[in-house]
Length: 368
Image 1 (cartoon, helix red, strand yellow):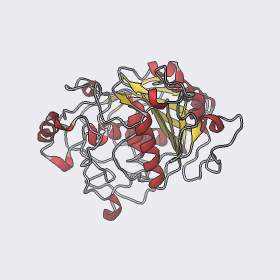
Image 2 (cartoon, rainbow, N blue to C red):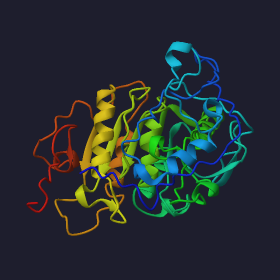
Image 3 (cartoon, rainbow, N blue to C red):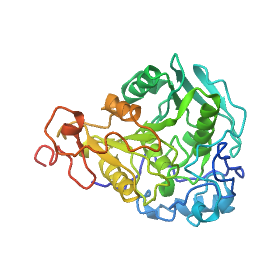
Image 4 (cartoon, rainbow, N blue to C red):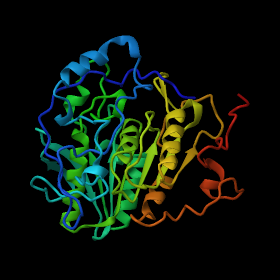
């Protein structure tokens, strides 16, 4: 089911970015800042990139001539474990002035990028609950995705738990790239190498933890479509999360997750496609396999119900994903881990979900 066509929203042009300052580890972390600051990555593996013969990759490489210290660079030679440097599993500290995290738009100005970024905040009545970062899809906005589907389900759960749901807004410059715009900068080997969104994310997390408003053991990340793909790449580069949910996302280049983040990987079967060009079932299964191979707990869910007559690129099973996040705690086995797939009951995992390496419970889809 894997599609190797990354059209419409797979930009190939790189844009220069200033030299980064790596995020500091939170107080009490065992590591210090380093010059590399990003977990070992795999940008040399472009098997799932946009068509290899279009010539744009060479042009992009020219823009990144300074290489290792660019804000978005992911270097295959980086090895944070061996250097005793910055720890991707440690909760980051803020690097700039933190906003108040009041309801509505908040501005974050992390070091490492030359622009401030906006995020829309929703807060519960109390404190000490989860923090959830939810990343929007292509041509969506951070405040819009709170009004329906998975984005709404995540928000309602976080508020009910006296937590905070934060919806980062994409950098307009990312969407304005030539050659098929895409809302998020960092998408591994098949996108740009810029780390802007990771600096942005680390700053949000650092500010939220330092505010004392949330439980640092209940930090999770999630997203749909383009946001699901960014979520997938995040769990390949950061290990401080209690859980993650990818709705119609996935990652299609090899990786080793830095920490054992439990991940619920949701897709809509073979007809979960964007514009008929890029389908998400194969990349979702590849992501889940890579997570399990790397020591994380992951499983898949297919909300297609066996139908291949309709477009199933949707953030279905939103409440189920939100519940997966709600019960997760960093450093503890996820409560779902003892479950054995293939049971015949009424729970959603009995009917829609499957273990990595198995077929979807809806296969072969309309007898196809």
